[in-house]
Image (cartoon, rainbow, N blue to C red; front, side, top):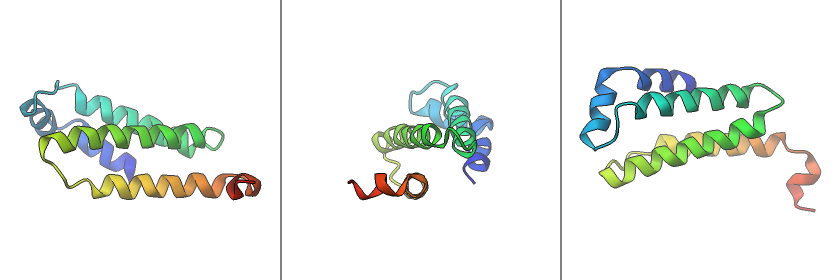
Length: 101
C-alpha cells in the first residue's frame, strides 16, 4: 500500500505544482516518494527491516512536517502507517527485548 501511494504521488505534474505553490522545489515529491519506496523495500527485505522501518518513520515525520505548516491537517494516514510499522517492528523484536528486562 505504501509503495502504491508513493508511486501515485511521485510523478504527476499536479503534485509538483502543489508543492511549488507552498514554495517547495518541484523535486520534493519525487525525492520523498523515492525515499519512501526505498525504505519500504528495506523494510520488506528481511535482514534490514529495522533500518527500513525507522527510515519509513523518518519519511512520515518529514511528510508531517511539510503538511502542518501549510494548513494541511489531514495527516491521519501518516499516523496509521507509522503505527503499523512500529507494531511490525515491535513484533519482530526478540521476546526478551520487548519486555524491557
